[in-house]
Length: 163
Length: 122
Image (cartoon, rainbow over all chains, first blue to last red; front, side, top):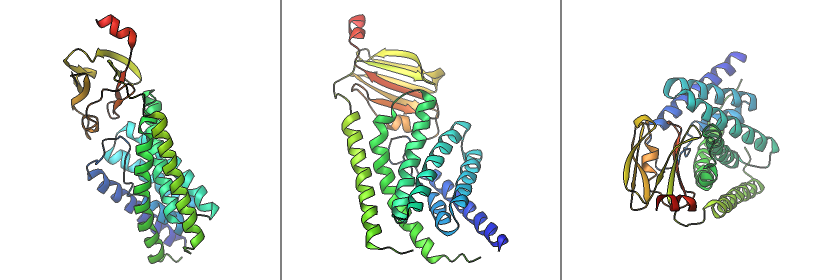
């Protein structure tokens, strides 16, 4: 039973990394730093619903570290960790409340990831430009979050993980 | 997973709430809309240069990592060595409070309306 869980988690972590790589190949369509589709969040939301919040936190952090080492820089690691931690906190709390569906959880995750990244950037750069980007980050996070949430919901429904 | 009507309503309310938040942020922070007259360049949060928007010019910032252009009261980054080039794509800025950010190079260019600066230049 335990082995199967480890296998599923490894699969999800691999999926999250591949999705991060795919996303890094998509050129940015809006010239606002921090705007991302957040494809890797599909894997995180899936694990959050199928395995639990601790497992989702683990997958998300593994993804952030490995992706930063492979494709990023030391600075981008700081941005990503801040985004991931804020996003995970929001998603876990929202899911625990039991009031919302996958879409709302994913939307919150998307918005908070964007905001967390840029907030960390502004702290490092000691500027307050965040307020100027905030509306764009929230709206793009909502749109991306809805798409990711719908995909994740389909995966949660269709993929059977029995252990 | 049960997609009940109540959950859909809660989702909708949450998304509407976030949209409202975005609108409030936009209204609060969109700035005065007045033209600025000075471009301040910061690297790592520290001001390294300050250029008047009234003077046309091409400046190499941060040891040449980003090229700043100033013409017709607008400032923009013409070129940069960062991988995503988002700073170049952010285009021209001219209004007080507007800002171009290059996260990989930790560089920002912000427009200010600085009255004392006008007198200094003229």
